[in-house]
Length: 123
Image 1 (cartoon, rainbow, N blue to C red):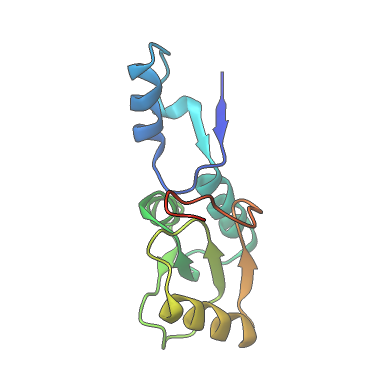
Image 2 (cartoon, helix red, strand yellow):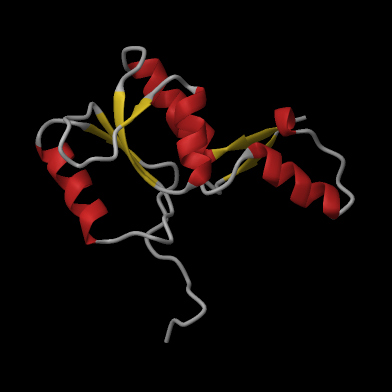
């Protein structure tokens, strides 16, 4: 069995815990997140240790590390890829870093094509 989620913010371990809380017996090995799919794609199309700019949360960062990718956060070092997922702490600095990297030739991949995200405070 394989359960697939478009949630790139969390790890398979946390997804499995949530499902177990709902009495769905599943192991982390049976979970595939969109973060894992995106970073596996990068890993398959890049050299080992490729430098990536991550715009996303812990699940995306964990998946990148597990794929052997090198996360670059300084906004100055050139990167090979920009991987962008849901990021509740998204800001202008992250946008600038990602945009500059793409304009300098970095390839871009996003785990989900979500164009908007409902927020609790949305009007």
